[in-house]
Amino acid sequence: MTAPQFLETAHGTKIAYHRTHGISPGVVFLGGFMSDMEGGKATELEAYCKRAGRAFVRFDYQGHGQSSGEFADGTIGLWLKDALAVIDQLTEGPQILVGSSMGGWIALLAAKARRARIKGLAGIAAAPDFTVRHWAELSDADQQTILRDGRLEVYSDYGPDPYIFTRDLFDDGWQNRVNHGPIDLDIPVRLIQGTCDPDVPWQTAMSIADNLTGDDTEVILVPGGDHRLSERNDLARLVRTVDALAKDIS
Image 1 (spheres, rainbow, N blue to C red):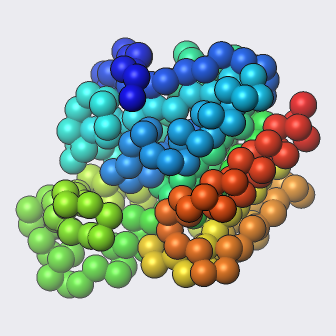
Image 2 (cartoon, rainbow, N blue to C red; image 1 turned 180 degrees about the vertical axis):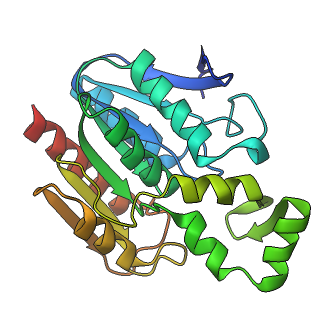
């Protein structure tokens, strides 16, 4: 694993990143909640872009991976600022955003904020507005813990460290909702979604597609697919999808 470079942002995050120079459209990978840029989807896309001679960037949000800050201090709005800083300062020309889980939410927000630059989007188990759904699914006791203490720690099957949900995360998530009405984007969008995803219901991909205002949206359902979609056939499907997007945009 090679050492990353770092981008100092105006809003205070020291972002760790890996960048590959190449042709346009470039590809930017946006990871998920408590994930980092060393995961299989990010590195597989990097390998594809190197083979294709295509520009590529993967990075860690604040409090993730090798970037600065504490995870518990992060919010959707802050991580969006990280993503926009990467797009603005580390890429040139048209870009395709590839967002995994929470990264799909941030990708949609970033595409709306940088319409002149973002020419395509691929979501893998995209989870826009997941904080709204998660709050509704919490027990009354857990909701009261967050309201009283400002945070809740939840253990999962994805690793030994607990997921930290803060009141700021939920409040900010509500302000940054994107899938509660029309999503005004007129770019090609591909949504890859497993039908057995325990964290993001497959119907989420359908609702995103229904809300997008553009006329070039496809939902790719993976029968039996889980949330990570990181098996060899899943990675091959992702590369095919991004490659086709890039060729269409070119």
